[in-house]
Image (cartoon, rainbow, N blue to C red; front, side):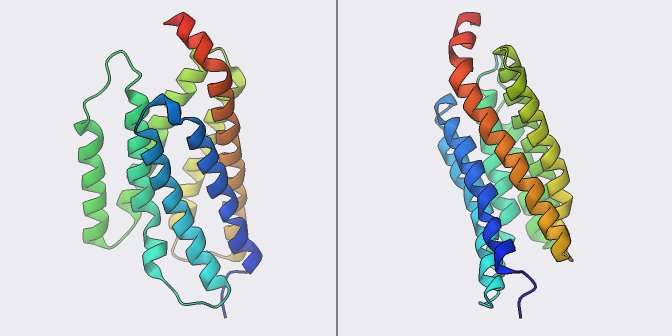
Length: 204
């Protein structure tokens, strides 16, 4: 018997959809954003699919579960890099590629998700700060606040999701936090693309 109720497993697709919506709204900010979105969504979808398969007493497919943080780490690194291109003096690509490669290599060598998880949190932080700054420059305080809430949610989710032993109650708490965080992200992204372009264009 599965340790995951089907309802719990099915709900895990909701934050994935919200994340997909949020990143899709940012697609015009840089050509790399769609690729970043695909990687981020693939990671979340793989974990949700694994949970649903297990919940309906299907086979345990550890490859799906294990894909979460490598895909998230790569996707959020790509997103952070893409957003950093908007800066007056964008950082060198190696500043993103080298630590990503090191984190993925460490996770593979240790057979543990925590190095990739740590780098994912760092990459998410960079992306969130850049988005928050864009919203603040556009004069959208609500969007800036929502990006901040999204970031706070990510700080909670990493350690919660990486735990080897998780109760059903903890899983519901994790997914509820994730759903709220991704809803905040999607709404903030919508506000950013709806209101920021004209204001940022004037400021530029």
